[in-house]
Image (cartoon, rainbow, N blue to C red):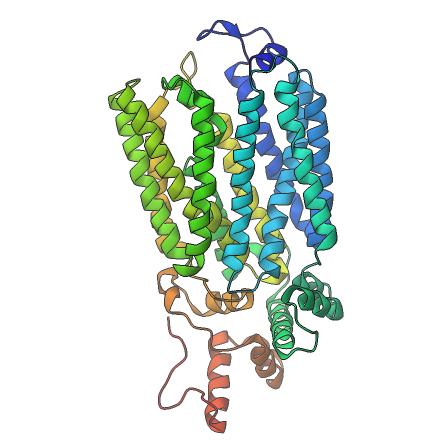
Length: 501
């Protein structure tokens, strides 16, 4: 955008075209401060979602985002523009933590992965629209060259607010607040069943029993989020979101235009539009495969595919810099890489983190996992110009930077094998049972729920004193099995055993 460069430059002359521009440090500041805002916004999402609710929390978050958009639209110099970036980022951070929380708490288990994955689909569609609008306005010789792309964001803020005024609050939030009748009405509306339907009563009873069970094990403070199985799940979620960023995907979407131009590709904007189209189209297979294959296989598939593409891009770009062959390979394998990311790590990282945590600490833990995503997003956005660009103080890696991203993709594959549990087809309450009984991620595929939390509460209530509170799920399961075998209703008969790890 020549007009934006002329308007916001503080006098720096770009040596490549001898025109006014912003410096590498200013570029890093402008790009990365949005990510810094998202980090603090994500951390603030937990108290907001627990105090206002998931629904009104999103409405309030959109208001913060709108303030940031107004400041950016009105800006004519870097200071106000950067302030707008921070507030817009703060709103995005709030929204990015609360939306997957809302989706995971409302969707039925058989399509929960696809529903939460649609969050990533919406992101890819937004990136595509942004690339198209940027390409259409970049040559304007007036403030519309940057104000139009920024102001378009008002439309999505309005859509989100109107949608949240129509949709109900999540039944799990009402259970957390002790408002069981409101929870029944909310779940009835979401499932399109009468409040006295047996299936709805059973689901609501399981949600309530699970929440009571989790509260009986301990409090839900921030410190408690780092203890026991919740701490293990929090570490898994934070590492998953951090590694999603370290695959290098936002290098393509933040700096793709300038990187392609520096690589000798004449129209970097067009290539960016192409990569965004690939990003959108490739997300659809992921929405299907997350329920067909499961979480673990799809994440492994994506990590290995991304690793291969990154190594090819880095090798060819380093061996044949600036050649036509290298440029064609670069574009082709960037598109292949985006396919592997968009069909796996893009949507599934949000799916997994939305499923990991018990109700009592879900908002807190999800806000911290989302904050880890934005923290790495900020670090990559800030460091990339120094890593890739030439000139004093810069590493001038160019295509070699893909060796770095490829190395992290290999780490991603190892992480999935060791840490990611398979949660396909399980309710959020059954995920708690999975973590309570299965100690190894690679054994989780064979897990089958064998006990409901309504039964857990019944058994614990029948045991007096602290003994009932301190019974493990395995002990309770064995007790329920013995009772079922006595009445002959299909319990653990003829030497059968509960799930073993």
